[in-house]
Amino acid sequence: MSLDQLKQYVTDSEKDEKSSNGYRATSSFMMLENVDLMIERYLKEKQTEQGAILLDVFGLLQGFFVAIDALYDLAIGLTQYKYHVNINNNPTLHELKFIRNDIVGHPTHRTYHDGATGFSILSMDNLSKEKISYKTYIYEKNKMDIVTKDVLFAPLIEAYKTEKENVLNEIYLYLKHEDKKTDIPEKIYALFETLNDEVLAEIKDLFVSEYHMDETSSHRFLWRLKLLEVLIHWEETDPEIKEFILYLSKMQASKLYEIALDLEGRKGEDLFFAVPPILSSFYKFIRKNEKIAVPLLKNLNDFKHPFFQRDLISLMALNPGKDAYKLLRLLKDTTNENKVFLIGSMMRAYRPKR
Image (cartoon, rainbow, N blue to C red):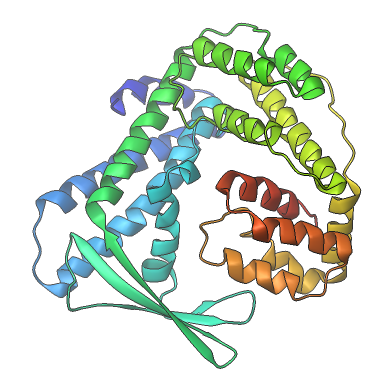
């Protein structure tokens, strides 16, 4: 799908002078057009001099970074929500922000939460517009680790084009969708109460049909349905962990309920569920160590983040109590990315004292 199909919606959105969303959409739309021009030029223009190659590579990486923000802001500008965009579900683009920070963002000095410092150095021997390589040197307590990274630009460009196409198409389908009331929110309310697999499957089919979506869509509603499905089938024997998983399930169901209501412009019931004791104990542990611990929570929901293990180990070194340690140990022993996201997101939900 081309940007042109959304152009009239963007133009019409500018007419609402009481809302900033119109020009938010316009700014985002024009930036996406600009990045398309950059990519086209990048692919057509051959470079042999190192300075010219670096200029193109830096421009492309920064362009991708801006374009991803523009996709989120276009969705918000036209629909009020970012439900149609979920870049982290695309492994190639998810890694992009780490590459960009290493090379274009802060290559000469990275400071990590545990006190380590890092420095990235580009390999100038095999520099090209097709591929770059770099090494990051991480120093921590008189020890050095070296991380080597190769970046291929063809897959990165293809991943961006595919993701952009999907996002634009889903925004377009939503804007064309007739405003009408469905019983999806009511079915999710029942799902919140029962956590029934069959009800979940029924909701998925109804949502895909109602909003004319592909089942492989990255829409946040379908993504959260997958997370809830993981939770429903997640088996543990420890009663405290089982209670924690039940809480996670209720949380996901409530978020689905919120999205479904938002998409229909409706208000619903307040869904209540108490925080389990094991999570309360974890939050108390964080409060006692707030200055050091809060920055370490940031990456705990992202299994592929370069600092995930580093930050987790740093938290475990702060001498947590029995319950807090049990939760941290659960996260450390978990290798399923969805489960890591679910556990880590609840840890990140801690709110610091004002």
